[in-house]
Image 1: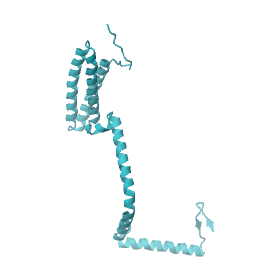
Image 2: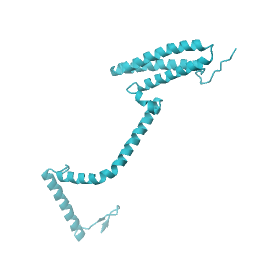
Image 3: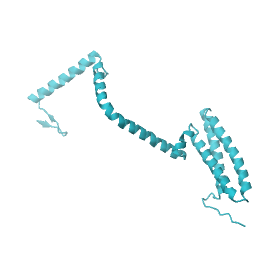
Image 4: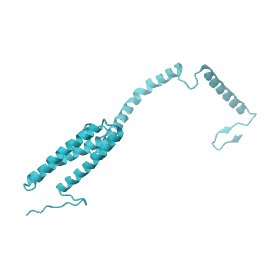
Length: 196
């Protein structure tokens, strides 16, 4: 007997094992040829369908809870990833949809920062008026930017992208100004306001 490196034995020609292997191969070829002749080769036949349904009836109820659990875990992981990317809580994710979702999230964050600036400036009277005026102007501008992003949703791709780029640049300027009002310089250091 000759041996392959895979460990399967190849029967020598003329032996009983060789003749059995040839018979099995011919029988398999006949089955395939018969299936091809009937047009059932590679297709789902009524008999095959019954077998598949029978297996599904047995295996389905066992696997269904695991599949549902896996699907809900994948969905939850995806939503957490999207919320982290947008910088919002998962509960607020439904508020920011569409192609401008990231811009809407930034605008909402800047609006919250304006509320914080107003609350912070209310404690010190000297900067209260200037901060309040800045917050009013910037709040109105943020509303305009929100409307622009919402309108861009229905624009053709090129116009929408250019609108989003313009809004992005405007938000960058607003965020720089906000940081300045909070006392953070562009180097990232806090500036302390001295009292006279």
